[in-house]
Length: 224
Image 1 (cartoon, rainbow, N blue to C red):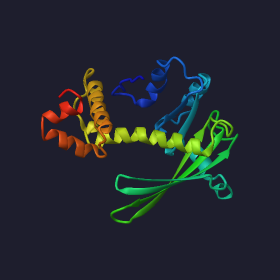
Image 2: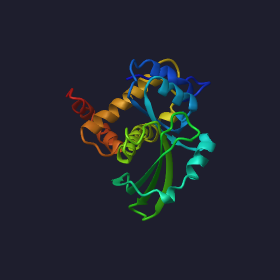
Image 3: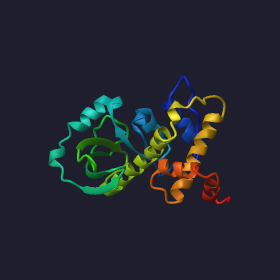
Image 4: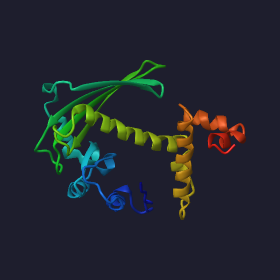
């Protein structure tokens, strides 16, 4: 819907509100973001526009994270479990949710704990990671299953950026002037979207397949 360039002497945090200012109506919309944007000013802004948020809490909000970790999660029953397979691993996600009213974050109504248990299907190695999140949605507005889907939905967005960085080496690109970085990002998104629409499961493999024959990209785009 919209995008902004991040200046060389700043970061994404300063672009959060200007970007959303370009969206006319946020009332009732649930905004997700990565942990960088777990900022009190951002929460106040969203609440002021009648929007909701669910955000991941990491080290940039140390006091809030400590508060979440210290919550009595052992006394809270498991409220959801999902399984998934992808990227050479299987994953089990368990979610617990608690209604809160004293968290150190504006408008927080629910606290979320997600435990991700990942097993590498080749090596058999298993890792467990605990993720915390807060949401402005009340228990009446969003169930644990709905909160889990919102968090999972944002992870799919992060996966797009992961592909752009690892497969296209976007972060290492020396193209940094004018509108060229934005144009290149658009072309990368087009390539990923076209391959996904064609049923590609592995973007790197899809790129290699199309690079072997100059006619294949045209057929992929419906031009040949």
